[in-house]
Length: 511
Image 1 (cartoon, rainbow, N blue to C red):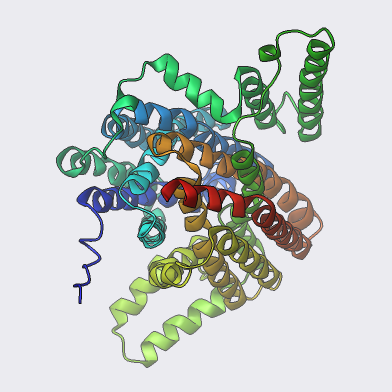
Image 2 (image 1 turned 60 degrees about the vertical axis):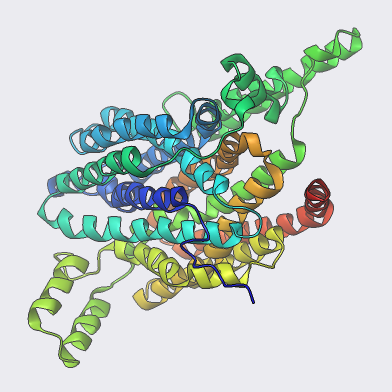
C-alpha cells in the first residue's frame, strides 16, 4: 500500500512561505481594519477621528473597493515580471503608509494615506492568491485553499487581538504594530520565497500584449472603458460631488449612451470591431453574483463593531467570563490581564473581539470544513455557505444579548469557510487559463471590490438611518439576511444553467 504523504510534503515550500506572509499581512490589515469603524467614529477626545457613520462607510467603501478593483492589473504585471518583484514593491509601500495612517487626523489626509495602503494591498492580493493557485492542483486545491484561508484568519485573529490590547495605551501603537508586521515579510520574501513556475511565453510577452489580454477578459477596449468608468462614477457616490442616487443616474446615462452609439454604428453598418464586445461572459456573471455575497459579508467588519458599541451591553458577559476563570482557579494576574486586553474602561467587551470570534472559529474549524466539502461541487458549496451566513444575520437581530451576537458571528464563520475558499478554488482551477492565473485572480477580486463599495455605502447609510436615527437595527440585519438568501438562490440558478457546463468543459480539457 502506498505511503500517505505528510501534509507538509503535499505542497512545495513556496506554498508554506506564501501562507506565512499572508499571516503577517492580515495581522497588519485586520489589526487596523477591525478597529477602523471605532477609530473613525470615536470621539476626538479619546484619540479618534470623530467622523460620522456616513463618512466612515464612504471611506471604508471607496478605499476597499480600490484595493479589490486594481488586482486585475497588478496580477497581470505579476504574471509578466514575476511575483517576487511585485511583492517586494507591495511591502515597501505598505509598511510606511500603515505608520502614516496613525499620524493624520483630517478626513482628506486620512483618506489619501488610506488610499496609499490600498495601492500596496492591491499589488499584494492577487500575487499571494496566485502563489497558492500555482502551488496546488485540482487534487489538493480544496485542502490547499482551506489551509490558506485558515492562515488568513490566524492573522485576522492575532492582528486585532494584539491591536485591541495596545490601543489602550494609545491608538498610535496600533498603526506602529501594523507597520512592523508587514515589514517582517521583506526578509521572508527575499530569503525563502521561490518564484512559482511561469510559462516561458508569459514572461517574454511585451507589455502591450499583456494589457491587451487583460482587457480581453472583459471584452474589447470599449466595453472595458464603459465598465471601468461606471465603477469609478459609483465610487464618487455620496461625496460632495455626487449623491448615491445621482451616481446611479449618471452611470445609467453613461451606459445608455454607449449602447446608443453601438446602435448607430450597427445602423450605418460600420466596422463591427468598433462596437462593444463582451469577453468571458460566464466568468463576469459569476463575479457579479458573488459580489452580493461580499456586500453582506462585509457587514461583520464594517457594521457590527458600531452595533456592538451602541446597542449591546456586554459588561455582564465580561463579568461572567472573569468570574468563571477565578472559580476554576486561574491566577489573579491572568484574570486581570484578560480583562485588560478584552475590556473597555467602562467594563464592556471591546467590539473588535466580537468580530474576532469569526477568525478564531476559522482557525479551529477551517481544515475540517475543507475536508468535508472536498467532494462537493464548488458552486453548490458556495451556495450552501451563503445560505448559512443568512441565518447568522437573523441571529444578530437579537444581538443586544452579547452571547447571541457571538453565536451569530460563530455561525457566520461556517458559511464563510465554505463559500470564500471554494470561490477562489473555482476561479483558479475551473475558469483561469494556467498562464493567466494571476490576472484572473485579480479579476476575481472585482467581486470583493463591488462588495466593499456597496457594502460600505449600505453600512454607513443603513446604520445611520435604521439603527441610529430610527433605533431599529433589526430591520438592517433583516435586509442583509435577505440579500444573502437572494444571492444563494442566484448561485443555484447559475450552477444549473452555466456552472455544470464549465465543469464539463474543464474535465474534457484534462482528458
